[in-house]
Image (cartoon, rainbow over all chains, first blue to last red):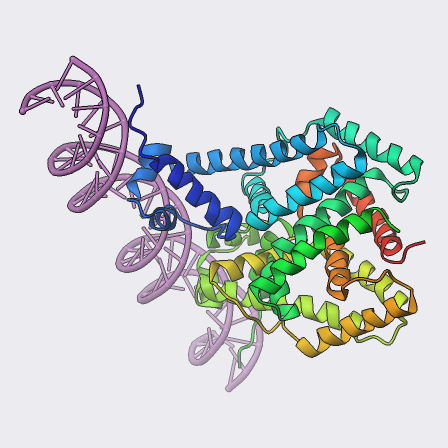
Length: 196
Length: 196
DNA sequence: TTTAAGTTTGACAAAAATGTTAAACAAAAG
DNA sequence: CTTTTGTTTAACATTTTTGTCAAACTTAAA
């Protein structure tokens, strides 16, 4: 069997993910990945065959991680409001850790002209849109195209973390200040979505 | 004098910007840029000395373009509400044309570990924050940390265009559908910011 | 303690991307 | 028309990045 398992394979992949998703180093070379992981570059080829293969794995992992997060929240049997509160908390925690994960997915899609994906899940999304529509009828949230509701939600959660380096400069804030602002933000987004 | 001007220099830079800002091809090589522009790759070196120099110019242009847009809107003497309506219209039109411009700035910053920038403009931003605070006192917009107000605004405008490839898949929409959704969105963002 | 298997390393090879140069070319000035 | 100057091209050189391979190493099983 494939015994031994020194953890090197995982180490390399995790280091790559950290460079891509956390540090936003979307141009990182195999050398940079290996150096950051503290291993010989050849091991990238030993474990992943090629740079492209590593990228493919990371790309698919990123998609899966994103879907798993959403599924866990969406498929829960909480009430809508609780569900949203939970979503904001879980998603933003991950976004604070890996602000550039979606970005990595998108730039890889653009790089390879990928125009479709397993991410679709038409039924699930439609179910979600319907649930949102029902809440609008009930009057818990403002009436609008339910797609805009989702887009607003994810925009408000994700974008400020993508643009963190810029925002820190613009608002003259240090890392700690900005983290506080993002924590405070969870509540704010919830209140924006459920007005009054 | 430096006469002649065949427009090649501009052509190359514009092509690069289009690849980076519009198509999100953040990894584009000089060869790809030259091919897309339909010119010999050597001309990139002839006009810009090096790849890095071209990137630098594009990077600084991107910053300037962004600042100019904001200045034009912010420095106008419109009433606050009109100003915001105008900002949404102008910014989203540009975001529809160049969805990845801010992204390019950010990834370049991450790539070179840049942690400050001419973009700061502390006085101007503080003025804006104060203006927003005053509007909150007046009751035209919901009370919150004014920074969140700005972050919300730009998130709702910019993010859906960055994630367009993903959203089209998730919502099962074609390009035209999505453009309509974004047009419709201008009004929605305005109404979200100025509730009721 | 040998043996066998996976793991790690360094030297080398190949490929990709960038940079340089001299010569060909084209258009305006003399 | 020819000279001058800026522009474009192709061939070549360099650098950077990626990939391969055999030998050294390490650990678990025989």
